[in-house]
Length: 455
Image (cartoon, rainbow, N blue to C red; front, side):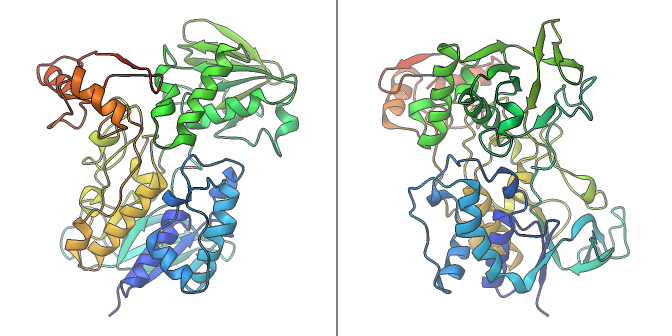
């Protein structure tokens, strides 16, 4: 009997998984809560991607599309979310229409007739996926499940993991990356607007706000300094990503963006003229507040499955040391697949942005490599599952090989690259951490790139 693989989510990673499943002679069942593919992408279709087309299309998807006459975009061009939809996801969705179930929101996944406590017969028992939609509830069965539902619709709140007083239901608070230059322009133009956060969503929003006329922009950066938020600059092999930090630094220096560093939100008061108060007592008056503090996975649908997650990041434990933002500042992580993403529940995987849990550093190309490996494992091809078929870009200021100028600095000042510890940036850093210290604390100026780096 042909194996059926339920794929939760019809975003870039979910659709890529479906293409791989079909190539392996299995049947995909793609369940999507939206009425179209790329439902979450439509919420950020105004955003330019910092990775170019080369890193945003999946190999199996390309093979499927090109067989139908599709022409791939120019590899070096940087698409927007809208480009990703029209030039790739929508054609791919049409090619997979026979296996798509749109408008079906997954509310639970379990094993047929047994709860997570029972051992006997578990591996042979099919999964049951409970869904809701306009036609009512429905139960669907599958032999394997890939959860690629993402995290976009689960933004982090403004407090330390919880909403602060006055946050919930406040109409003047928005999350993620509002379209401040487009459909949301009238909401922000000419206002005093604060952005809380220090990741790419916050940076992109701050830069967009700075272009609006008569708009006063305040950056509420929770970190004590902005160095980490500015990223790799000119050393970043994804040039568009590095340019974000460079541009933000310029706007802050010129005073076009007012910086409030070390600002940890404690409360929000008022509905029109709001007062944002920090834990240290500082108060900022704003008319609009954008909370761009990242996203988190919705794990409620997996309550009856045996899922193993890191206690802090809510990602697979093997993956956690590679993506932990406490240890990494750039988001580079070696390619990984079925082995790193496996759970105690047989034939179940979490892929894509959701697999990173609360870590903010996911690249789409990583998700494509994940599902290639996962589907190979589900098909029984463990050699292909273990093989690495992806070369990721790196910023050059964290683990792994970077630009030659930075590699030379690492060799000369830090004793070369680390050899044992994933959380060490160089040999000296590795030795220091082995001896219980926080790191080597070296700092070298690289004039060529104007980047301060440990190594």
